[in-house]
Length: 446
Image (cartoon, rainbow, N blue to C red):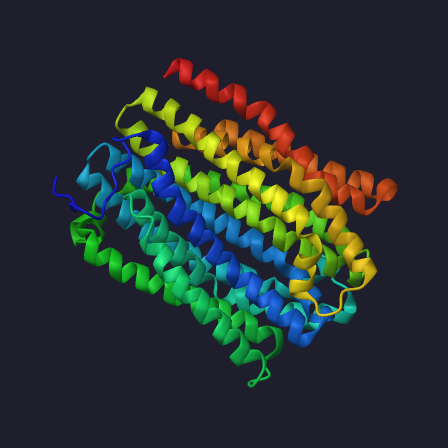
């Protein structure tokens, strides 16, 4: 099979610890720059338009996150399929995987965009958005959902490149697009007076350019991405495999967000100050989520390639190495976030009130110490999925959903906002209780 000599990273050879770290660092940096999209929106909106506008952006962020999680999981499943074919050195299978991923992504974009935009008003009513911010919340959410195609486009091509071992190209263009996003945020909000909708347009345009440039470089470096007519022939089995892998992963990631949606709904019912404080805290919390997601991407591609190559012991070594790296990052983030709780809030608001500080402090103080549980969940769940076991991760997601909703809805009447703060740690613990034994049982059987 003809393969690029220098651009493709073979994760089936070399020291597992350094192979993973070398692959993961660009993904972590890329995720951090992707976080800058929403951070830039929130900081610029909060500083220029005020606390109500920040609350409007924050009140709908979980819906946007819900959609993006499904997209990330759906296209991430495609990446696992491609990575397994790459590890098996199956060029024909790789081409069919790329063709099917492209076709399914186009269909998925059309359907998802129509559903999201048509239900936008109804979504705001379901979420009990405070009336004083509902207009701006709709403007921001509608524009972001209208640009769903840019998000699908970016996630599809970046997951393809990472499955082929290239984690650097998506990073390079995310850096460019993050800078562009900040520039467009200021341009659209300040001189053009486009309000929160301007921040949404800046995010969508920046992400689209990131995807486009990543595709152009990918086409240059990887011949397997140059699709031919015959790559679309006899693809029924490939379509079935991609749907069986992609949809459960997308559904699992979105199911996690349903619990967070219940959390956001409870926060919305507490008023604008609670929404503003929770929004600032959750933006900081996203730092840990994105770093853990980056390690998930690294171990996913690592395990997929080695599973395709039939290297069980190497999988075991990689998972152990990934756990060490992930928990080191989580410890650093926990300490940093706890020490910088108030400066974090001040990033988003010029003059935060004591009430806003109260809500932000409480959330971060309770959640941050449990990041190490999130790290265990991220590594074990992704490793299991990459070995073609979708049942256990799905069951774990259902446990997370039940735990989040039970803690938030069931306890909110008794302990109020505290129920929101303890929901995520309880969900992570419940999911780990299932996944960790399943992983070790699988490794004994393989």
